[in-house]
Image (cartoon, rainbow, N blue to C red; front, top):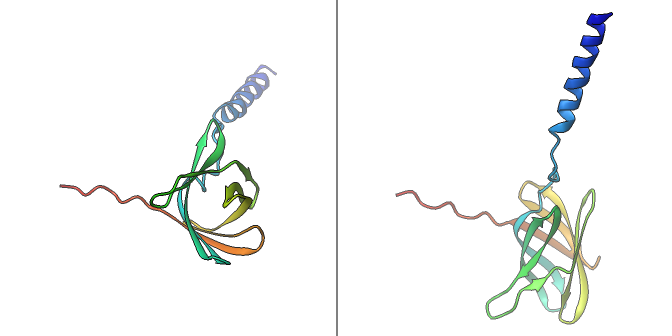
Length: 131
């Protein structure tokens, strides 16, 4: 009986140790980083933007980086869903949303306002050259 109690106590300890090492950071940080996104077929032509997404205090957010001579655009709201993310921001005085879903390791697809197709590619920072 004593051996059974020791065995059960040891088993309980092992189970609890696995739980104690669980990750506190979200497992899917796929979208964190810089993305070049093209929105196709808008009335003004294809729209190009660079989006920088960061996770701070466990929450995903970011900005749309400025083109030359322009100001950055803050993402006012970001929803993380099982299949992707939806970004909300203001463009030309209108509140708009952009939905993106993972296509592969470095590409996303989606749409702007459920009307215009979007596709994006992760920006990979160049590694410093070794001397």
